[in-house]
Length: 457
Image 1: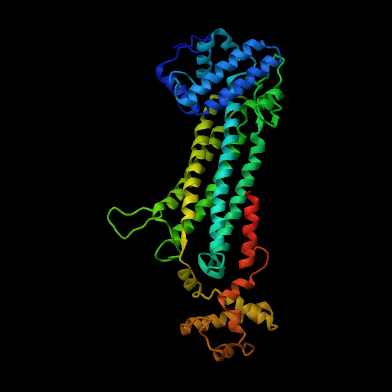
Image 2: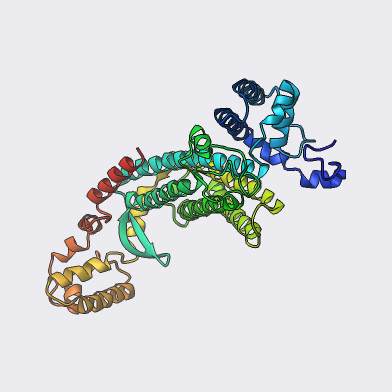
């Protein structure tokens, strides 16, 4: 089959080369963006009298028919076409005749594909933001349910200080809000129209790029035609934001995997989001969380792929840039799938609050509160810290917790200690006294939940 670009060459390529060069197998998913962009282009051409109003109407009607047929499945992409742009133009010309050949006036596939991928990523960014909000809502609802459930907080994976499960979950809400901010910020760079940059140098036709951008809902146009066709920063920035998002839910996945183990026993996942073993009947595996953790590396790989593709390219368009779409598509598809499964997994997750509290009662996580109590007695913090450490050491040797020590045992280390110490080291009191802004007290967690719910409205 001779190509639409035949002229300088005979337009006939070897079958192997043809298949290697083709992108329609993956860029056909942008048919909606491609056709919508072409409709706007025809309208602009008519507005500037580059083609007649009648010709534009014929082209637009033809494109709308193609769009309807592709949406319904009545029209399938032709694998023999090089890309979605050529396919749409070919079908249009078949349906309306030579007028269809006028559509490509004052544009190139270089700015056309840049337009399509910008339109697609802009739409998908909004889709992902919506799904992040759904996950944040699920996490904040679960945090509200367990805002007073005491558990150990960790540093270095060692029990550190008492927190609530609600407070723990809200930490991930804050991460996800930043992910939304990053995506919204990224959209500012996506929301710039390249159409009209043509191949690389602009055009001799009297076009109106701002009109075309307005029709398509863009807020601005690329200000340099070379940059307009060769820029893929917006895709790289999107994949970077998605990689950070995946890093966040991968961290939560690691916690969920640990928490659902027998060793921790802090949570139980719904049967709907776990699997069993083929030979061990007792197993209940957190496969969804593990898959999210694994797929994070896949999204990282998509980012590195695109960075590597772009790192050595001279201006302007190079065929290497055909490799930009598959990593973007893969990253978006992966993130969407992960967010979809995650929201349901969190909504159906149950906390084993008694196990959490038992774990909190071990490990001396109220030792800092003991030191703070001594500071209240007038000791410098460093002195109070040393005395608390000595008391913990005594407990370990005596196989006791801080709560189990008698007052005489306390006084044997520091005679300033009185009965108030038991209130000071009570886990519930330890949590409630941490009412500083952003802290783990119930009131603080409630404030965080209110803030998050307002933020995702």
